[in-house]
Length: 471
Image (tube, rainbow, N blue to C red; front, side, top):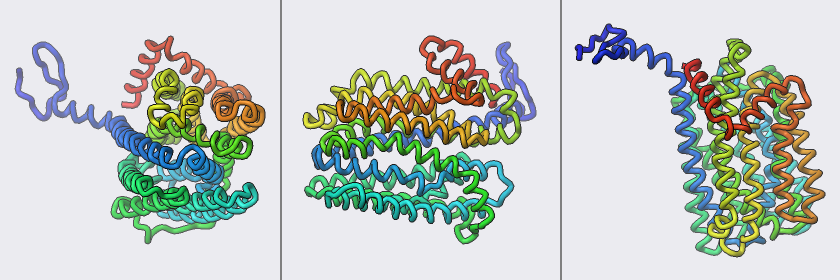
């Protein structure tokens, strides 16, 4: 073997040509962007594992401690709050990340304006949630738990530093803050369960955990992003951001409607026991959602840069096809085994008193497949500045879910709500693409992705080609 010289770009070893040190450096530089994305996904994947384990433990602890009726009450309150969460965020997350990646506006102004807008949005969301909560239910305990749970939204603006880390593909700091608060919350839930605490105490703990996560993120941000003292809120920038974000806000409200309205409608039409069974199943189903969110969030800055360089028009189709294939593969990887094992798993996890949640889980887990595809399509729509189409497709999903819930819940209870949710996810993230010409190509790509089990070889070739292009 020849000695390795620093200035050699290639090295001959036993007849094989390998890169020298300089060649290796060039290769690593070329692939640095890809490895940064993969490292960020790794951190978010680790976050997903921690979130999965801790949330599973917390859910099991709370469900067993409270029983179906009180657990259903807590699920009703969480679902009710979920209808207003998008209003607290004002649809600014993806917009802020996009601007921090590609905009010439100073980062301090983007961060400060986003923080001010979300602080106002969070306060408005809490006030509206309280007003609606007082009007919906006469039961004092339900009303009290709902009003306490909604206070969690006040922590929304504390999450703004996470947008900076996402734009820089350095989400590990947000992971540390969120997971630390989650682990503390899980331990405290165990203590509350052992002490026989009431559902009110568990509601307050959710508020404490949200605030703890936000404060921890602010503490970890010191020295890693522009100082909070330099953040400035601009009226002109706020007006621009709100004008661009309103379709995302409306889409978020529509998504919240078809993702959370089933819990509220079950509470109104079927009672707390059905809500408890449904909440137990949905918790096991939606635990997996953090994984595709992590992947799509890590890929999003690269997609924004591609659009900013106008490179997406030339090579975006194979890139997006590989993205859809990845997300569909993830969807099948989770949905198939959970649907086969859902009934015994639910009984094992929650106990015999939650036996009815198993069949609900078997149905509801198939929302995961279309959530994966919808996240990929949603990031592309934001990067392409097609925010209004995201709104319109979300409204279709909301209409389908509310209509089917009214038809199915009175007859089938929690399982009817699960079927309605699967149908609404399919309609919003896949079927609605046929309505608008700009989304026909996305529909074709998602159709190919849904056929992934019979086209694994071509999908693998496409993924390799995208990797080489990204490198």
